[in-house]
Image (cartoon, rainbow, N blue to C red):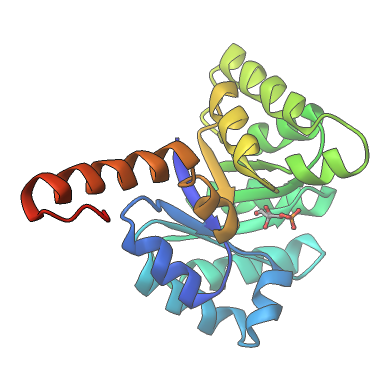
Length: 219
Ligand code: E4P
């Protein structure tokens, strides 16, 4: 499973990249807005930090403008993946961009039917939003399971990116469901490290070692 960071914050990305386990980055207009720099500038900086797919989302809503914007974003860096929303215009733009050899991440997917449309349009990635479905009382993870099965049934090459992951269990369940990628905020990646038995075990190892070799009974 590939791990992507769902942030446009350079400090979080630098820290994440230092672990050597981050395979890519997803951004969206809200995340870019939080950092206060124009998208072209911010994603170019992100591409210098993380060597992997970096999703940059179009902000136009009509297909011709989305296509023009997508072509421009794709020129910023070889790792840019153009993100288009799952609307009629977004799917039109995805088909056109895919025909030009541009990799498209189709975002804001909330149903298996929508995921089929994206795959048929030649999307490189589909982004089903788990947490936002949970928020409205729907089982978000069921959508990941359904899309993985449907894509396997027909041999679609589109990668399933579990998005809107809110905690470690979302990551683990996405992996169990067979999602190719999980994108997560930095705090979710960080939470994956934690286990009290790891902390307690390490403390005991250090205590035993120091007692035997350094006569340090306090540990
Ligand atoms: C994915 O590409 C989206 O940016 C993201 O996962 C949305 O997450 P949220 O629902 O926590 O905003």
